[in-house]
Image 1 (spheres, rainbow, N blue to C red):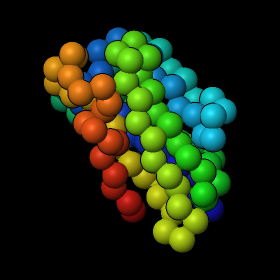
Image 2: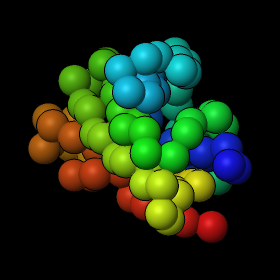
Image 3: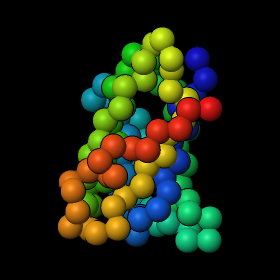
Image 4: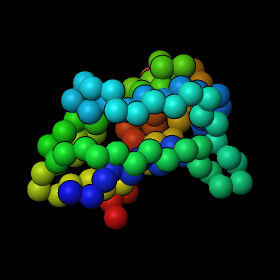
Amino acid sequence: MPPLQIDFEDGFSGDTVVVRADGRELWREDDVTTNLAASVATIARLEVPAGTQVEVSVPTRHLTATVARAPSTPLTRFAVRLPADPCGSGEPEGRPAQRTT
């Protein structure tokens, strides 16, 4: 199975980002900040089996969202954008924006 790529895009400013798969921490990065010229803060590439729940959290803003990597049509890439209002909805853009490639 191809690796899962998560693009962290707009709205990050000195944030900590954590990615978990089925509750196990796979990736963490501190001081994540969006490069405004490229609209990219960082990119995570992870080996995550199909059928796994992937949780993306931004603990510095108390935000969390979950997506499933379904076995039938495996997700290979998605983007995460934070709301412009730091006192916003409580999860990144309601859900991570999904793009399959």
